[in-house]
Image (spheres, rainbow, N blue to C red):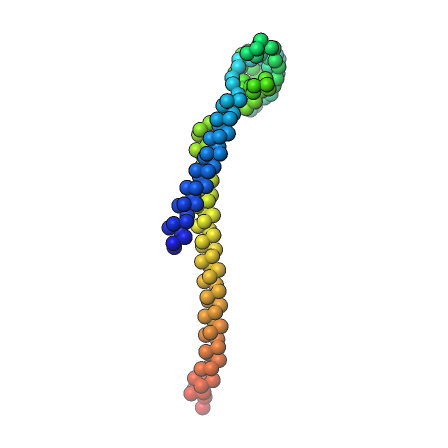
Length: 158
């Protein structure tokens, strides 16, 4: 019980905060390395279902360099349409940077998994100790019954 009362919250909070801080470092790094630009589609995006499709895009970088890449756009988006894409400092199309919501979710998830792990571990240890103690008690009971049973059952024989 002491483990559950003291260690479980400490482990959950510690693991959750560590995961949150690591994720926030990723958020800050990605936010600093990526920025959004307006690009134009160079061909009509393939169509069909609702899922976004890769399509070629072109944009002019901050330095005036024309760059090209592939971005995910809605199916059927016509050639020449403008889309917002995230690019890295070296001009490559990238996914949007992680958000603080991602960091918070990661912290809560890891904290919850740590709490579950401590709870499951303490239950397993308790079950193991109970099993060992039961085996010991059954062995003692069997040894005592071996001594008592002959005298006890002799009383009922004719």
